Image 1 (tube, rainbow, N blue to C red):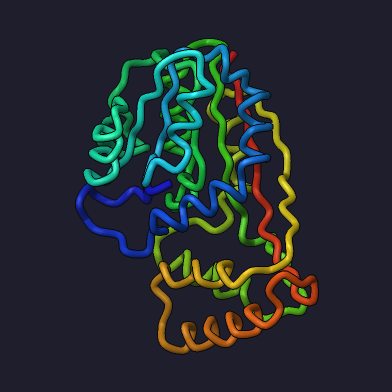
Image 2: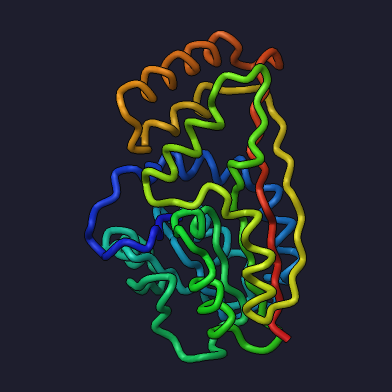
Length: 248
């Protein structure tokens, strides 16, 4: 979840904290499980998790996989955390994987390709390191399709903040074509995560490089959401693309 394509050690305070990554991982548990089941993760013996971050889903992948999970992140602190947790970990850029072709049978991304302005090079690299019959599994958002009622300006703040951070807020809709271009046979599902709004949905904006006026607007929205917490009077939904792309 933490691979934005910057150089190792560059420092990216806009990335979610460990607690926020765990929270997002819980929100995505159902869709992620569907995608992993479709990719037959239990039969996959060589799994690569790209953009490990704070290892929010690493244990789950290791538990469900049929073999060893290799963790990869561009940030030294991230892959060292994985090593400290007993996982095999590598420091590298998602767009330049340090592996021979055909050496994995599943490559997994969750909120990782979001941090690349152009996901195509990373998808091509995933296709290269996949063995025949292997699968790329991606769980990635698309803030361009974000719904909010009433309209509070949250969608605009997210898109502007992500763009300022060097991310790609429309990554979800870009992935099917990127996978097809890389020679993968692609299955797509849009995940729906409806739930009453929570203030945490706005608090995540704190990690992004917003200017003073944007932070003022985010604060005003957060106060509205705090008053509506647990109710349906305010509705916010970010669509997630579930991608399972198989190498022939």
